[in-house]
Length: 158
Image (cartoon, rainbow, N blue to C red; front, side, top):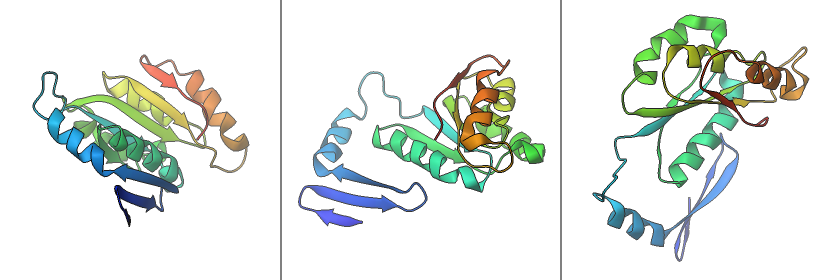
């Protein structure tokens, strides 16, 4: 963290991003608390399949937090070990969860699995990691676009 005259600048190594938090926004967030439509209990879960997806998932979580949303991280829950996503089901199905962002590379199957287990929108983020025939994330992207699970929206790679 680097202190600035009107805020602070922080580098997040995992997300490989720098963000600046202006001190003026702290005053605004204090004023907004307790207003009509307070969403303090609502949150978005950011899930990722494996550790190679962490930079993309962490960037999504930090972006949510910078926008004033609560982000809960559920990492290393890929379909290669299906028991891990099943173990996370109580967190994924919690009433305060309003959406789930799922980052996955390789075969890109995790968003479809998650969408089949929850009743909130799932935002699928294909990552460019992988080996073999992953084609820089295109394989995961195509899998996600062809998902038959309801409620899946797909964004671009990384």
